Length: 283
Length: 355
Image (tube, rainbow over all chains, first blue to last red; front, side, top):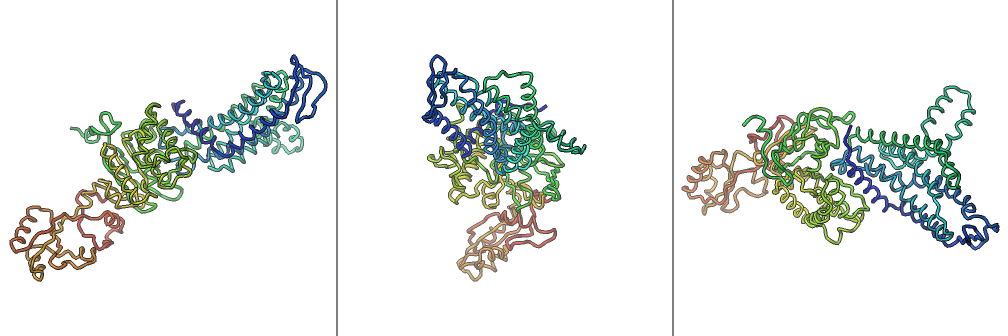
């Protein structure tokens, strides 16, 4: 067992985060979220009386006439926000972070890093955690912003947007494990992004595994489909859980925990594979 | 003193040294193959602690591969290597090593100060000391202060190289490994960098230099090794490798016409190589450059006394040295091959090992 230094891992994650905050993709992401929040702030007008919505306008148009509790009124919006955060945010995250691991291993950079008191495993784990921290910061920025706007407009405090975003974070953490393994294997941002997108598509498609299995009676093909899809996190199920929670539905922990655990195990396998690749390589 | 004591010497210098240290680098029978290419073929090499060591050789000779194996960046197939007495992958040893790669890629969004701070953090330097040390090092390598907080993405090659050198010096390393440190730096800057490197070496650190600039290696290093086709072909102290068994003696005599004859009578041979090398005649007006073969100072003194007695005036006496370029060319020549430059002699060094 290799003794790992949390300080070193933290320092690697810190550098990854520091570098990413200067990248154009990250700035574009944060700017997009900021513009969305600004538009929401300026366009949304809610008249709330004792927790009930007496009137609402979006871009100056009335959005409903019935007097309903404000949290009930906003449920569909939260649900939509959760889905957008999940599906669009994931895609953006895949593209924005694809070059981080290959960039660390570029010639002239990796030699310098490996000559420092950093174990290769620490470099991999630190990079993974740094990327996850980037994702967490973007998520917190978006969710925190929406929550602040709602608090200002409706004096409403809710964790609903956070529940949806949490599922998106879990999904990204799983996908980035694969992206990292492919990224360090080929030292290519394009292949890393490709692996991320493939996992994303397979993760969505895996929820329809039974439908796909019905397409064929060929036993070897069915076996291949079963085996290949077995470890892939069911992204659609995660998205539905997040959207349901955002809409105020009760979360069945006994159903959610295995999904989250499976995604975490999938991510851990990706990181371990990446660590094994970096550990075995000459640079 | 035991045999082991020879191997482990007490070292009273070195910025981070405490107690006994081993040779800075000790490699035995190192081999490395990349696919079908045998990059390193059994390198055995020792770099004494505190030495200023230069590794020279053609492109593809295995120099960078050896450095990478020395730093644990690349693993060897066979043999063994110890750096500062430990395995190259030992993290505690790497804290004591400063390394400047040949083409360092600094994150372009980092400023020089941020980059050095990051290196200092990895080396475990306390937060309160970090900023001061980083600023001192950037000043030492001559990076303008106005650039310290600017992103390195906008730096010139020379500025990046200076930043890289400063990063290699973080934590006062015991072993400083520099791969082409003056690459991209102007002549004035080269001199400044050379002075910095020499100052660091004077502080007790071992210097391991890989440079294509032989003059630079000659000026900085006191030990060299020549790699050729993945093997060490020559290694040793530069003073020994460069020594010829002869002295260069220059005379003057008012009667120039008889100069050569008188010098020959006293055992001094007119130095043709000097004539060819310098591109002028061997005696300009009344000055004659000769060679006295032998290392016996007594015999030289007697010959000089006879020459003086015969009316010659001695204007220069100096031991003859072989240029590093000559050592390199000669060491790479096929066995039994003729010397490759006109200034070479048939003199062989005494302890400059030629495996």
